[in-house]
Length: 464
Image (cartoon, rainbow, N blue to C red):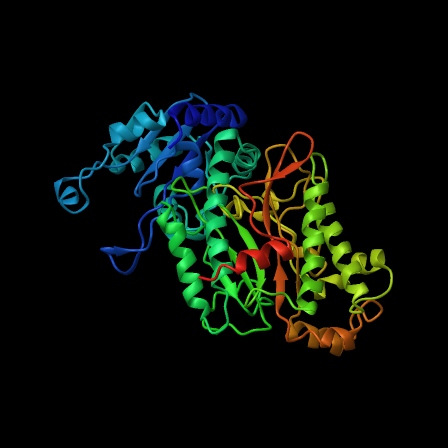
């Protein structure tokens, strides 16, 4: 946890922004994966962590936005728990660390909640993603589970996004700590990427690095020589010379701030000419975004900048043709980069995505496109100092998508299908960094992770 003043100040600001009604914040619970005493790894709700900081299951909290009163609900562990778990902090201790003056037994929650309902006070809560929270809200409010899931407060969502998307120095330090652990994961992955090795060995090893440094992975490891499958979690391929291996992986700190880095390397450690050509185009796009990102610029513009550089590069290889501006406007480049440039990052690897992507990455000045590819852009709105954003352009040769577009003759004015078809055995390349928007520009977070062709080849000479 941070100091209690951090949580006191966050809740104080939230009260000022909301000014009426109450806020209800259910924490997460342990969920068994085959029987009750054998649960999945517990992960606290990120908004509960942001405002209260307490990383243990079976908690809830209420903030009265009118009176300023706060109540933390939870139970102390009894002797039977202590036998198995050891001595745990008491609710008195947790409340003190969080700066909450009043805590009650969890059994008191229905009565307190009902007292607000009886006074017709507005009850604000964030979108629920766990069925347990939906059931709890249903039981407390008397509404159906469906109504509970659909009853999230837009006012509270917007207030939380406005606060949490601007990272303070403490948060930035935690994110950089996560990125530095992530760096160790990626250097290890590079050095293990040798012919004959199974992907699972590499994926398991780097996941162990995240756990060894006190946290867990911030999302399931994506690692594959089938780099054209954007979120591939299948790790059964045997590495072969001539293939590229994409590793998209990140660590969480023990305070749950995330890192998210992608590197793509040639199996065996040496780029061939074709690999170098495609890789350099993606690297040029990645670096251009770093060089140009700054406050008051729409991140959508950075996505389109990356798309233009990728289009120019593919034109130089004869894979695309025609006007770059027209090709990007039409979305022709999306055959090769069908995803968005990046997303916000913090306590969630896709920060606050559970609150609704359109609330986090969009606002009243920029709306989500319906164009294929651009529609997947998670972050489009104006950049502000304190935003932490991923910069992750890529080029992919997806056989199924290629065959569909060729059959439909889609964007034939901009795509040389005969030349593109020669790369259908290639896979894909993605390069991702985490950047902080500063007062005048941006900076890459964490210690440098090998990224140029020369740096990657030098790193991979040290074989693990």
